[in-house]
Length: 143
Figure 1 (cartoon, rainbow, N blue to C red):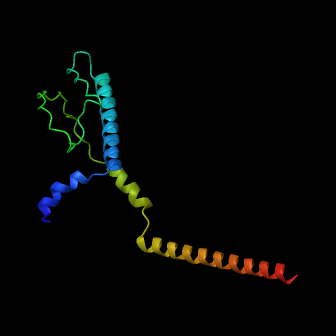
Figure 2 (tube, helix red, strand yellow):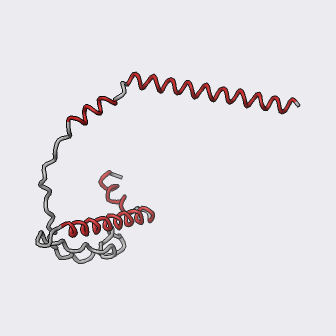
Figure 3 (cartoon, rainbow, N blue to C red):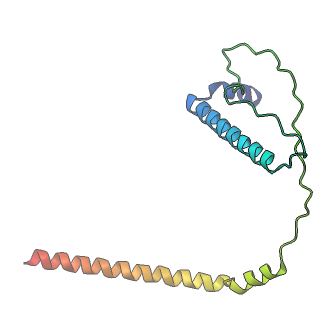
């Protein structure tokens, strides 16, 4: 089957679990967008920009097309809501931050040696525990 035909057939084979997961994710995103709208409207001054219309509820948002149902009539276009752009300039990171990072940065070779020492230490402790365990079992069985 050519790739172009596989692309058309693949969406029809979506499992029920995947479909439910996608719907759950959509509902979570809508919940988050509702919260953002509430925060924006709370932060907007009374005479400021008009509030955006409330977003559609999860039940009114259409899901992925179902191959068994006929296509619905086209919905009327709604104008996009007004969202003011952020115009505040972003300040560059302070020079002090770079100097602080350089002060606490560890050399790669030093880090490599520390990790190597730690591995040998863990191996030695584990080996001693095995020896103590074997010696304890030997002493218990010998009696």
